[in-house]
Amino acid sequence: MRYKFVSILCGALLLLSCGKSTEVTIVDGSAGILPDEKPSNATTAQKTTSQDDFTVIKIGEPNSIHTLDPLFGTNNSEFRTLSLIYDGLTKIDMNGNVKPAIAKKWAISRDSLRYTFTIHDNVFYHSDSRFTSGIGRKVIPEDIIMNFERMASILVPDNAAEMFTSIKGFKTFHTEQTFIKIPANRTINSIEGITAPNDSTITIQLSKKDKDLLKKLAHPLASIYPKESLPTDKTPITKPIGTGSYYLAQQKSKLLILASNDDYFQSQEVPTRIDITHGKKEADLYQDFAKGNLDALIEIGPGTITQLTDSTGKLDFMYQSAFNLYDSSVKSEVNFYYNPQSESNNVETFLRSQKKDFLNFDRALGEVIIKDPRSSVDSLEKQNVHIAFTDNPAEVYLTDAIAKKLAGNRATVVMNSSYAITDEVTFSTKYFPSARQTIVWKKPVLILTKEGVTGIKVSHYPWNISFDGSTITKSN
Image (cartoon, rainbow, N blue to C red; front, side):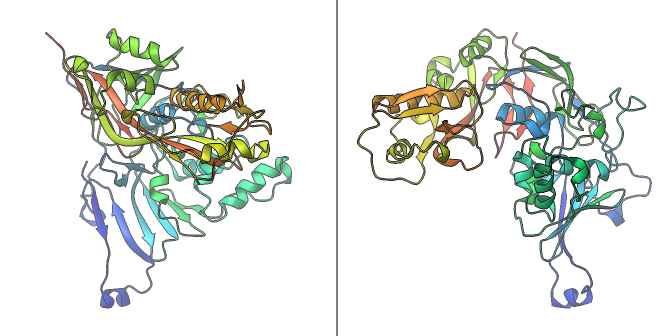
């Protein structure tokens, strides 16, 4: 689909003649047709074009996909899957540009504090028996308002809420939802800065400028879904209903089957089905790929990178006849956070005193950065270090490397059995309130495919995946 961007950069005379208007920037994604040019009988609906043959691409994801609820997503594998099932108001294209998605156009006020979004009139949710007719209904502004209000709920993680504190009234609404436990005692019923002037418009008013707002609205955490998909007991969504290019057709242990949405509102050419294997150990996932059971591995793990690449980070010559390695140029951040409540300052200082190459990571694994460097500590003898549990392969790899260094300096290192952060936990790979970022590993997002598999792309963000135009060439 072509998008037309129109920036009203008025000269002095035009600004004077338009003095009553506060809108200065308009972005229109209506298939390149301005509103006053569109024929009265035109339709903007565009369906997904399936490839000529029934095409199934089988991919392996490195992390367990624990949830299909946008607000509970935490790892790249979950976010990539969510981005296929759901849409946001905006999206990021493969060139890194913000483009219209559920919002077909928007206008930004002169002070950059008010965003007015016009919703596509041809975006429908996936058909589901939870709708009265069984057929997916149209997206309406009330859905979007509900989505933002749920972000602020005490029943969901704060990850999405922390992205949108610039919205007027959002922080106050979130604070009351969090600290006033009895719903009847709450006095704030809505987010002041999010309103629906009519049945096709959403207005977001900011209390402070946020130059990244449009990008944030494209993140899977800001996906749009209907109230019908919410369980009555207010637990996380397990059976997703989105508007995306794929819907969940089947869910098995460690396997998700996504089928293409033939009524998708944007033009694309995608495989008929995507089978996602997840939750396996990195070595087992690679064995599935090597045996031909998988067509591609998305964001291959550090063990696989080390095995398959040479000293320059390229695919080793012995694998070049069978595999392709695609470097997305995207980096995935793996973080190691210090918990000040643990009062293990010597351990934190020791890590911050190291050089960035102290883990001796191969070049192909990316870059390790020490945050806020400090002077060295002689010994960690009698220091107990507790690290919160993780099953993310990259986080495990980083944690193991750091643990060996700590143990080599006489510290006693213990891996806790829980993700939870308590006062005794020294470090975690998951962000938590009061966390201090200590080490950052910028790991490359590499895609490994069989010979003949092309077109799977990740761009600008680890979650921004596309199968548009991807193909499998069958061998003779």
